[in-house]
Image (spheres, rainbow, N blue to C red):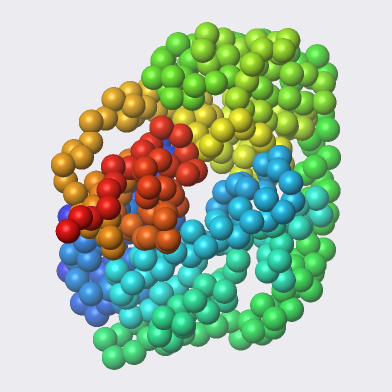
Length: 410
C-alpha cells in the first residue's frame, strides 16, 4: 500500500517478518514520483515479487548480490570441501539475485549492499581478489558480468559518491571525478592494502581494547550466562525442540554447554552436543558483559570464530542467538511453534520439467513456480538455496524438511 509524502512522491514498504529475515524482519522500499520508480530491495528476500511489480514499471532496482554471512568460511572442514561450499554459495547468491532481476525487469539494476571488505590482516584472506579464495564475497563487477551475459547492458556500477539521475528518456550516471573506478577493481588488492593502511591505527586501538574485559579478570561467564539465558530458555520449548541438540561454547580458558534439552547452562564435562562455537575469550567476555541481544550482528558476522555441527544446517540454533531478550525470544518461540506444527497445503501442486511437486517450499513457503530450478536430479529453491533430491524429496542441506514430489506420468 502506497503512502503519499507530497503531491508527487509516494513510498511503499514491503515487509518480511520471519526471524530468519533478521530480528526485526526485513523490508523492501519502493519510492516513486511522476517521472521514475525505484525499488531498494537490498537483501530482503521477498517471496511475493508480484506485489513489488504491482506499483508499475521499475526504473532502478537496488539489490544485494554478494555474501552477507559467515558460512562456510568459519566452519571446521577440510580446505577443498570448504572451497567447494563457498563456490556453491556464490552460485546460489547469484541465482537468487538474477531471479529478482529477471522478474522485476527494471531499466537498470544497481548491485549494492556489499561486498564487505576485511581490513584486519587476520581476516584479509576473506576478500575476493583473484576469485580463487575460499570466500563468498564477489564484487559488483562479477555480478554485472553475469547480467551482461543475459543481455542486460544498462546496469550500473555505483560506488560511494555516485549520482544517478533518472528521467523517462534516459538514466545519467555521474561517478566521483577524483577516483579511477576501473582501476579500483582492476588493482583491487593494491586498493585494499591502501585502505588497510589508512585504518591500521584505528584497528590497532580497537583490538587493544579487547584484551581487558569490561567486567574484570574474574568475570564469571557461566554464572552470567545462567542468569541471562536460562529464563529465556524457559520461554522457548518449541525453539529448543527445533534445535534438537546441545551447544558447546569453547574458549582457551573455559567450556560451556547450553543444554537445550534441559533448558540449562552448564560447565562442559563431556555431555553430548551437536553444535560447537570456538570463540576468543576476550570477545566472549565482551559479548556477555554487554548482553548483546543479537549475536549474529554483534559477533558472528565478524567471522572471528570457528564453528562445527554434527548434521546439516539448523536455522533454530542461530534464531536462538538472534533473540536474547524476552521480547525477541517471545517472538522467536511463537514462530518456531507455528513452523514446527505447520500443516502446509500439500494439495496445491505445480509442474516443473518432468516433476509434479508441492507449490510451496517446505522451509519458507517460497513459491517454487517462481523460485524452483531443476538441475539433474536436484531441485533448488533459489530464494534461500535449499536443495532437494527429486527421487525422494529429502532436503540435501537441512534436516526434517522433505519436499512432496513425484515424476509426471502419462
